[in-house]
Image (cartoon, rainbow, N blue to C red; front, top):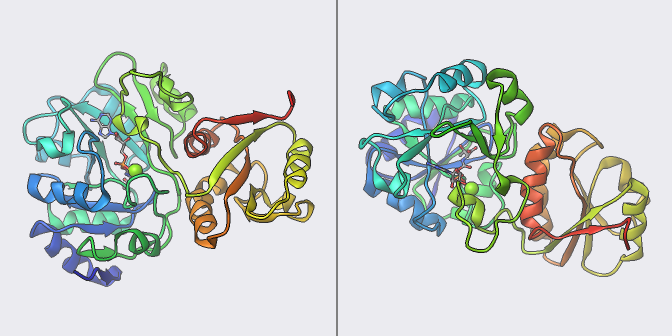
Length: 342
Ligand code: TXA
Ligand code: MG
């Protein structure tokens, strides 16, 4: 099978493929998704096959109107907290978990009694959901374990021949996957940080918890609230090493390790001071730009083919910085070198 590349004029073609139970890569403002009709279990099963995704990892259901939740009877009850968050942040990079109904096929919910729902902001994503006239289940459109795709080319690199089509809607603006918050029990809890920050959520809801798995490695045998959090994720083939310390200590450490196969994932301000290969996330402190470039940088490092070790600073946990931190600490297998103590 050859994967069709469609442009924004060909939304109806993509919608027809989806209505017939096919799988299509679609642009969203966070990352590209691998979409299938969320109400068709057999179509959803093809997503798992194409990605090599473990079947116990549930998918996000994408809608194009808040009213779709009721129209397709996706949840038992919409909590007040969900209405408030939708008003503030939808359409946008926020996924809400609620108690599901039986309209959600078991392939989507992976055996849980909840469903994750997102109303994406990308106009092409909205247009395709409307044209298909059904909610779309979509994980990120990468091979399981690889960095998420932020362009149609990234999707093709991973999925060519494995899916029916990819719809090209340009580079994703946010660059990291949506914030995932559960509203299904107790105090709302962030399971994955993203473009809607913890600070922004607290402004609307007051109390919001952050799941332990966001910052730390799960203890052996502990159950992940979000199954996706337990898998090694976002990892390029090269070994990512995180360094904690001042800018000066970072530059000195990397230059002292300027060997073959070493690369610095750095900021624009570092470029002239480093004597190794460099890939820049953007200007220092500009966390939005770092998020937008992160996965493309990790993919570039692998495409180079000769890089074995990547040195990056430990990101800040402020604002969108937390989303970058969460992805990089997983890419690094939770290993951090503290430059103050060596
Ligand atoms: O930005 C995004 O969220 C992208 C775009 C395509 O919308 N999608 C995405 O999907 O990142 P995926 O499958 O790569 O990540 C979804 C995460 C996984 O960690 C999964 O375990 C979690 O959300 N998840 C989905 N449904 C859940 C549920 N019912 N309960 C707990 N976690 C859930
Ligand atoms: Mg993913």
